[in-house]
Amino acid sequence: MDFKDDIVAISSPGGMGAISLIRVSGEKALEKVNPFFKSKSGKRLLDIKSHSMMFGEFTNGDEVIDEVVVSFFDKDKSYTGQQTVEISCHGSTFIQKKILEILLEKNIRLAKPGEFTMRSFLSGKMDLTQAEAVSDLIYSDSSSMHKIALSQMRGGFQNDLKVLREELLHFVSMIELELDFSEEDVDFANKSELEKLIKKVKEKVENLKKSFKYGNAIKNGVPVAIAGKPNSGKSSLLNTLLNEQKAIVSDIPGTTRDAIEDVIIIDGIKYRFIDTAGLRKTKDIIESKGIEITKSKISEASVLIYLFDINDIKESEILSDIKEFYREDLKIILIRNKVDLENKSTIDLENLLKKSGDFGITEVLEISALEKKSVEGLIKNLSNSFQFMDNSGDTVVTNMRHYEFLSQALISLGEVEKGLENDISGDLLSIDLRKAIDSIGEINGQITNDEMLGNIFSNFCIGK
Image (cartoon, rainbow, N blue to C red; front, side, top):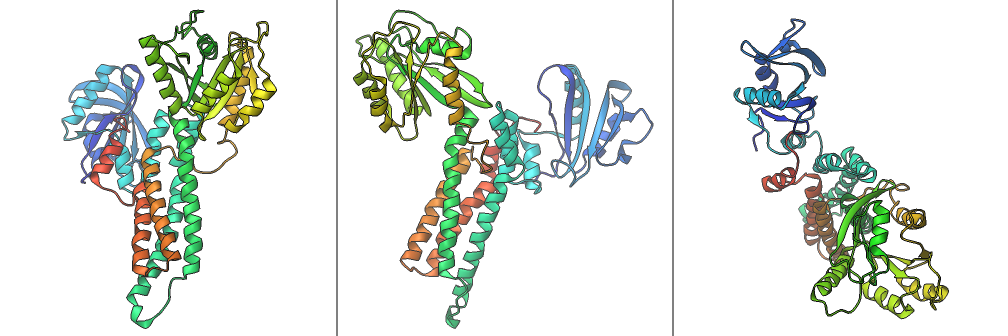
C-alpha cells in the first residue's frame, strides 16, 4: 500500500451546522493548502508551528470563500503520522463543498472511509485493536460502550496481547534454537516452564474469549425477550418500560402477532426489549408464525422475562415453558403480573420458586405492568445482572474478528498442551506455537493483509 499522497475529507457531521471541519493529510498537506490561505496577521501559513492555529481567509484567486481557522500538526506529531491541516469553516453546505472542490483540484485526493485512521495504524501510531476502538468510540451510544471503547483505544487490549505474544515468542525462539544446536544436545527451552506458560496464556485467552458474550451484548444492546401466554401483560410491560404506547394493548388474546422491538438505556447499558406473540396452541396461521418468531427471538436473547397472569395460568405451564427455553447462557426473570387484581390463583409461589431453581431462578417478581413504580424492581434486577464492568478492570472483547482469532489461538494452544503431554518433538511444538502467535498477531495487526485492512476500515465514516 502507498499512502504518501495527500487526502482530504469533511470530518464533521454531514449537513449544515455552525462550524465544519475539513481535514487534509499527507506528505505535502501544508504546502498544498498554503496558496488558498491568507492570514489576518500577515504571517505565512508555511511558517506555522505544529499544534498552532492561524485565523484568516480561505480564498481562490481573488474570491474569498470564507473566514477560517487553520490548525497544523506536523508529521510524527499528528493523528496520521503525516502532516495534517484542519480547516474550521462556517457550516454552510455551500462553503464546505466549495472548499472541498478547490482542494481536490490541487492534486489532493478524496479520502476513503477510515483512511485517516488507517494511516495512523500504518505509521505505527496505534495498533489495529486501537484503530477499531476509534470506530467503536464514534458509534458508542451508551456509557458502558463508551467506557470499553475508550479503554481499548488507550491500549488496554493491546497491552494484554503484547504480553501474551512476547512470552510465546520467547519460548518458540528457545525451541527453535535447540533445533539449530540439536547435534550438540543442548537444552534451551525448559519444558516444565513451557507447560506453565501455556496454561497461563490459555487461561488468559479463554477469559478474553468469554468476555465477548458480555462485550457483544453491550455493543449491540442486551437482547431481552418478553414472553408468556396471551394477555399476560407483555405489551403493557413494554409500553411501561419505554414510557410510550409502542405496542397495541388489547383484551383480545393473540393481538401481538409479530415481535416488537425498542431500546432503552438502564444505568449506562443498552437493552433491546422484544415484545413477542403470546405462547399458546393455535390454528390461526398468522398467529402460529408469530409464535415461531417468538421462539426464535428467545433463542437469540440474553435475558428472558417470562410473564404470567396472577389468575390465568397453571404451575405446570410455567415450568414447561421455562424448561423448553432454558439455556445456561440465558438469564430468566420470572414475573407474576396483575398483582393489583384479586388473587384467585392456586399457585404456591414458594413451591414454584423451588422447582424453578434448576433453571437459575432465585426469585419471583410481582408487579402491575401498568404502573411505572411497580416495575422498578425489574429494572433494578436487569441493572444488577449486567453491571459486571464497574468492578472489573479486565479487558472486554466486543469485536467478532477478535473473538474468531482468539478461538483459533485457543485451538493451537490446546495442540501445544497435547504435544507436551505426549512428549512430541520441538519442531512440531514450534508449528503450533507459531500458529497461536500468528492468531494473536492478526488481532493487533502485527500480521495483516490488504484485504483484511480494507474490510476493517471500510466500516469507518469518511473523514476519520
